[in-house]
Image 1 (spheres, rainbow, N blue to C red):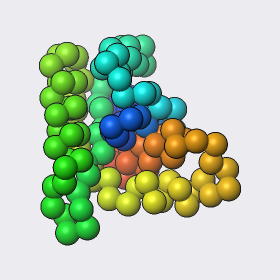
Image 2 (cartoon, rainbow, N blue to C red; image 1 turned 180 degrees about the horizontal axis):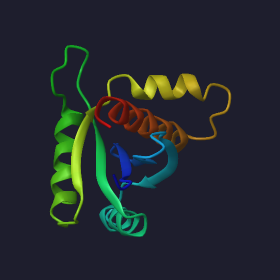
Image 3 (tube, rainbow, N blue to C red; image 1 turned 60 degrees about the horizontal axis):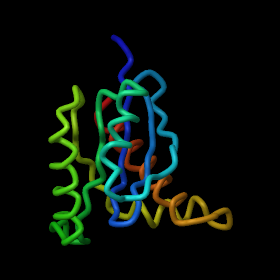
Image 4 (tube, rainbow, N blue to C red; image 1 turned 30 degrees about the vertical axis):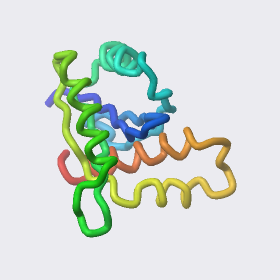
Length: 134
């Protein structure tokens, strides 16, 4: 079976955390972050093409009761814009409950800025997806 490359997005209003993995190794690696500005869709498209990404895994926010939130609507709207690009890439959602808390705990004492937390959260989202689906 050929290897598939994955890109995870932890979508926030200011930044988007990134992580990557492939289906052979199945280990998600933080890959930095992007400012969520007017060029972010173009930058993500460039990453998809440059790294031959076949699946984009997007963190799906919910509250502690499992209900959608205002942030859920923001993420869904972002994914609609990304889907309009019509890349040859699947876009899937993965529950992101408590991933930012886990990321902060993992990086305790080593945090340089919030973008690192976002990238670590993206890697947790991607690892959860890989473990459940690959």
